[in-house]
Image 1 (tube, protein in one colour):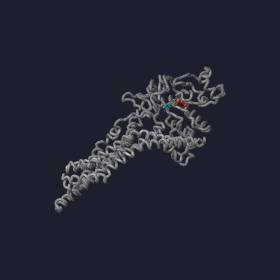
Image 2 (cartoon, helix red, strand yellow):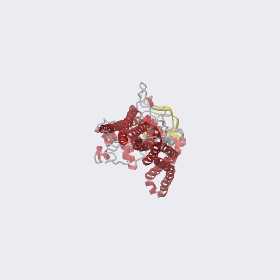
Image 3 (cartoon, helix red, strand yellow):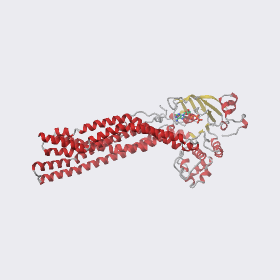
Image 4 (tube, rainbow, N blue to C red):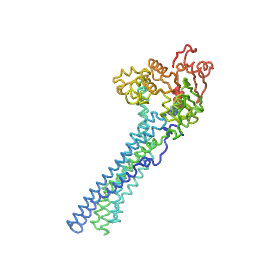
Length: 595
Ligand code: ATP
């Protein structure tokens, strides 16, 4: 199974639109057909007018019965056409509603199965764009594109049939401006396609420069380098302006020519010119030119409409591709039915574990060690050595590329995830609180917990008194009336873990976000909570883990050395070097005891 994070992989997704719209394809086709039939019917009155006018001119008058028929049929067709168009629009909007709901649910269901490690801030941006912006963009496709296509196509088709039925020679010459339109239009599209990538890249550079500028504004101001940040933004704008000129110059000229070709007055001019010529040559009677005068200019509107919706199609294709890519994000496969295993005991073993976030670099290779029940194992090493990656693998944020991790003899891949997180709790450096009450945040993993149990967990985590001091106590909502410091958030996440009462606990830089006072409170809470549990502690500060039963030093993707603090110091290897670099006391007794 592929455990690589997929956020970086953006496969080309051919036919994304048809894939994404597959569940409502039938309805959209029906909507387009209804709109096409409706558009055809709305043009019948024009033919009626031409018929009445022709009769008046040729026969010197119109019989009242004829007039009534023409009027009756014309009005009936107009209303029937409008009704069909409305039905098409309604169907398309219902299909849009359905597909929007379907896609949002499908994305959420998919994301509930992707590796937890996939959820980086970049991934959050992608999810937000797909669920919010891209699905909104698809609205123009589902709710409007197909019906517009049907309306324009229907109007053009019926007009052509009518004109050719009237007089094929006159029809051909009346339509002469239209190939000209397509010629210039194709040229414009080709020119814009060539420059589209530069245009989109320029747009992307502006986005990045703005985000970089806004995100880093505090640092930029503090270090007085605003000129530099401005200059990157200005450069992005200048490059975009160049790309924009390159994009629009060939487009504007060609589109102006294309639009001029099918301006109604130009089309009318051609019809009158050839009409006069044909009448002079005796090929056609003057009243027979009338249908062409009435109907041919009416082709301009639908054609322009078709041109405009190709733009929508272009945007929607990009949106559909992103949505489809999100729907194809590789997932962590749940255990196949019948292969589920239940952990027996709390021993954890890493067996020949290897992992790479991407194809370029192997972060861990052939790592084997075990965490014996009731013991504390510390993982230390240089920054970037892969310590947190080991913790993420144990929490199944990702699966190892090679080897396996077992809990109580069962491969993590075969343990149902709810069962896994009942056994393994975690407190990570990066605390995630949800926009909900403090109570709900603590009871996240155990919503059925009573108020008493929640308060007991908060007391164990040294955060109960702080919660009581909030405006609404446990009902205060995070981000609204509960503004917590990094250390307080950390203690809240400890309370969350305490409530679950897992036999195994992973602590990754649990005091990283805390100030000195908070750190004491967190350490105090953790040491009480850790008693009797199997602990895996990731630490930068070696003095916080010197009393661990075993310390594993990770370097260059593997275990460099391991042993107790005293053994490792005596070995005078990497650990001793890191200890000396940290400026810690050189004898064990002098060091500050901690969890
Ligand atoms: P630190 O002590 O600085 O937290 P660490 O030892 O915990 O470092 P890891 O966070 O495990 O190191 O990272 C190991 C390597 O994997 C680093 O080179 C890091 O850049 C890379 N890495 C970590 N997370 C990702 C990710 N989501 N995608 C790609 N590479 C990553």
